[in-house]
Image 1: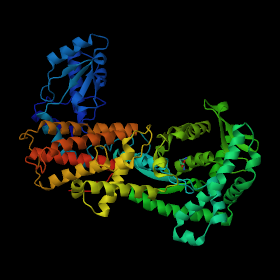
Image 2: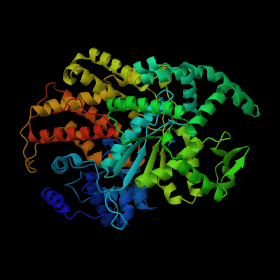
Image 3: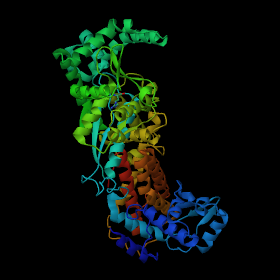
Amino acid sequence: STVTDLEALLAQLGVKVPIPQYPAADVLKRPLDIGRSYLADIFCSLLECDPDVAYKSIHWPNDISSGDLAVILPKLSQGGDSNAVGFDLINKFPERSLFVLPFHDGVHLRIMFNPNTLPRLLLPYMNDRRDSYGRDDSIGLRDLSSPEVGRKRLLVEFSSPNIASEFQARHLRSTIIGAYIANQYENMGWDVTRLNYLGDWGKPIGLLGVAWEKFGSEELFQADPAGHLHDIYHKILELFVPEQAASKKVRDEGGDPATIESQGLFAERNAFFKRMEEDDEQAVALWKRAREVNIKQYTELYARLNVTFDEYSGESQVKPETMAEVEEILKSKCISEESAGSWIIDLKKHSKLSGTAIIRDRTGSSTYLLRDLASVLERSRKYSFDKMIYVVAADQHTTHFARLFKILELMDMPDLASKLQHVHFSNVSKMSEKLGHGHTLDEILDQVQKATHDSLEMHPDMASVLGHSENSISSIAISALVAGELSTRRAQDHAFEVTRMTSFEPGTGPHLQYWYARLSTILDAYSTFIAPPSEEFDPLSDEECSLLRLLVQYPDITHLAYESLEPATVMTHLVNLALQISICLDDCDGKVIDSLTQAYLYDATRRVMESGMKVLGIIPVRTP
Ligand code: ARG
């Protein structure tokens, strides 16, 4: 579809062409931009204002009852009498095919598309674009000026659980938000690589090694590998927690916990980790087994969540040579210094940040930070990414990622540092309170699955539309979990209410699935699609028109969500769509489509629902 096609369609509808041109508008991708362009043009000609000011004065209300677009009059009148400007605009408003007469509402002028024109414009528009509606392949394309050709490359690191301990709420949130980010970037034309950076190295694995030496059983391991490792880790933690508390107490009182940490499990743990770093055969063999069984188990569990990774990397995979390279740069630039046997960076000496970053501790072991620094170099060499996103809880921002990025700048790698982004979310969660401590991902999934089963039993009418098979229950359960996770904004605490998320209340995954299935059923019965005759459109009901007004926004929604990386934006839009569908379809149960216009409307709605669900990671259960 080209601008010429679009202009031909607009001309048929009585709208003056050519479409006024604005650099910020992309009329072929975002139908609201058609509205914006015409409106800005009207303002320019009636008020003789600057095109840029005119375009930017147009806003998009987040509630269709406030209009499809709105103008903030004080912005437009730029110090003039905004009230008078508003009345003047209404009096002289010329474009009556595309819009109905605007109305004044406080500082706003509210604008609505003409309900007779909108279906004739939008339905063929959406039909032409099919599944690409709401996507924008051109965003990920490199500029012609760039030395490379093709698509820009995103590396997104997410989930990243620790193999010694449980799968925590922050790993669950990271998994689901990260999968969304990867999908969203792909929809915008980027070449995306999904990376899981396992916590499979460091002192905790040393502790796991000690646990194996004390409690490990080959027999129990064979029966349930990941489960057994988990059990022995918990056993050792029980013994270790009092030692940790004692060390913390000394530290809190301003003392040096070195003596405490040189004995007991501290010493055993450090010694085991040292053996790992020194490539001791036995220690490495144990670590390797632990890593392999975890990857195997996680791969299956992620598949249940519809999540895949291109690479299971991990802290263990960072090469000692690269770490040495980083340390060399830090030393040669006098960024790091030796302090009581460890190598540290005193951040306030070099930056606006505060605190001490430890590069290598006094036992000579590498740290989380050093491994991350080296992994940035390795990833940049391996993938030459244009951007890398870390999806990790917010509590690691100041303590870790801000430091990581700053140290790269100090290392004279500002370009590399500027490609990195930490996308964070609140680390406060109700999940362990609800599920009890020590849960694994399969326990989380099983709980949600059971609750979904109960919810379907309570709603036989819904169940009959969605199907009762184990397969559909699993899919609905996953949608419940994903929708639950993605309906809270990232900065908000994690609620994790299994009963609520598996219910059929508006806003839940099952509610989306149900209305998607209803749409599919109705469309099944109507299969004779021919090209939409734009002149012979049957009128739509007011509620159907509201549905269209939501559809018109979809590409703006996905753009917004792409920019903010806030999946709740897409989720909220789908919730509104499902509610509007329920209003349109429910007034007469067993509704049938009785006009071609309706067929196009519901088909377009179904496609937007599907596109939105998929980008969020929700697979429709019932498809036409
Ligand atoms: N494994 C870490 C944790 O559970 C998250 C890893 C985050 N990614 C990173 N590159 N540091 O807290």
